[in-house]
Length: 180
Image (cartoon, rainbow, N blue to C red; front, side):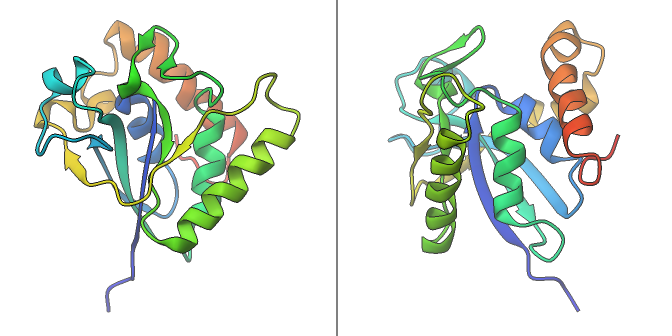
């Protein structure tokens, strides 16, 4: 008997950062880095990085909702990026790095809008959230070299200085959900 997995698609800066954290969440079965929200079919990394396609770097997450809810995925999502920065995360600048949730159905859209409102009113953020909700976006997987990036390149400087601290933060904030 196979489990009924659900799909979530989110973007919050470089997809390598999101992938590394979501891969380690209990209930997550697959994380694929990719592109969504733009006009070009089957875009390449170079095209997306140019900012001309309208795509965001995103991750597609296949998860078991009996183990982790879409709402909990969004809690983790908001904790590992700055949803108040418009079209950037740190030194990554451009629409391809926007904070976005791409709901797969009306229920996910409702949960996403409620999560954004809750985060906005939580007092955690000094500025208003700019996270976009983009239903109906087509997901395009990124090239092979972008998949499982942190695991394959753990000691690369970007991984050590940018991704590892996000992973450590997620493990400390969600110890029951994030495995080392």
